[in-house]
Length: 130
Image 1 (spheres, rainbow, N blue to C red):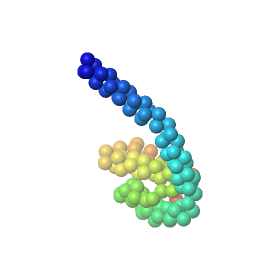
Image 2 (image 1 turned 120 degrees about the vertical axis):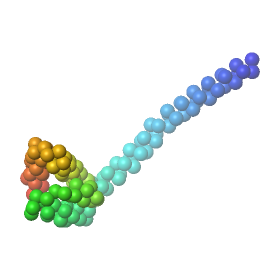
Image 3 (image 1 turned 180 degrees about the vertical axis):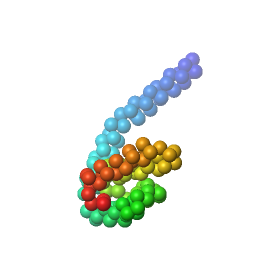
Image 4 (image 1 turned 135 degrees about the vertical axis):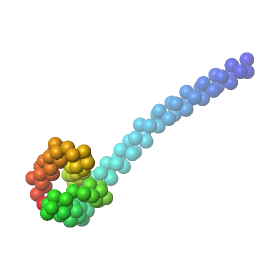
């Protein structure tokens, strides 16, 4: 009979723990979401970081614009600190240079052309990168 009480106690303890963890999640999520909202609002506009990013990206892209040399550019771009304003540009540039690198390694002209087309589209959208 004592084993039955122990089994019931153990099952109730497990249920209580599941309920306690389950009930605390909405409150912790609310706290984290409000904290994330405050962080994202402060990250939305950072003129100094934006200016530094623009200058650094222009310098990194110079060899590409002058000689269409793309070797190592993806890694240099990935090393930059990116302001929220330019996250889409940053990702698209990395993907475009990755396509070019893959095309060069695989001798696939179609991939190279897709990467170059993407870069030209980005240059139209963000003329300051030229």
